[in-house]
Length: 378
Picture (cartoon, rainbow, N blue to C red):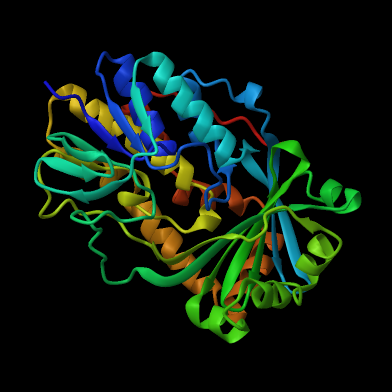
């Protein structure tokens, strides 16, 4: 019997492969890249994401992520800081995805690197190496759709966002100021996240409305000039050195998307961003990807159809995705972004409640067989 086929060897695909292989299945992972690559991602590992990875047997300490214990919200010259209700990590996807895929291989998964999937049909996939039967298919292609199984967008989705991600080497004083903190900088038309990862690098990840990008000049250089008009980013990045020759870019990010499981073949399981896309500021995208991988593997082990998995995942994260999307809309305008900073400064403890509203719930983790960790940030 053909084992499960997994399209994509990123976070969700690698996690699903590891869980399935450890359970005795022989999953096949089709990964289009021949070697580890950077991904458009804020690279913020929440405590929920760490819980999932620890349960997989991955040694996060060995990977050397940068500890994060606080969030700093900035708009113009105004800023506020609050302690996170958990200990987070900043870790590059290049390092994390490679370690996870290697771990899955060690457990018995088969990985075909350099194989791209071009079309998904009723019971097979058309790849760069030919057709392959795939009655059970786990689609973990991230934000990139595949012909034959494109996401059906819903009303209310924030679909006109453009994302950018790059790395900076900051000056020693600015790197020290970022130690232990994730910064979220709100500006007209979007927001940026800045945090440390391993190797004393800083991850700059941002999303902007398409109209804001066009108004800035429709080039990265012009957009960066616009970002440096923000006093906080000018201070952090002004003396810094960009590491990548050009940033990673993606257009039309469907923030607020949650898959409804309609009109799909019974054996198609959508994982990660193919199932739900939460706004980046929540810091829970990687946690949702890992949670989807575990739920899909459990559903397959139980012999239940993909529709049952999609209902369960939607019940676990649908409200959080919708609330985070609503919050992003409210914070986009001039009053909203300054009010958000003012509110956090007035009641820093509110970050606990906000985190609870926009993260995978503890009850959902327990139903997935995991015990939540709630170690406070430093």
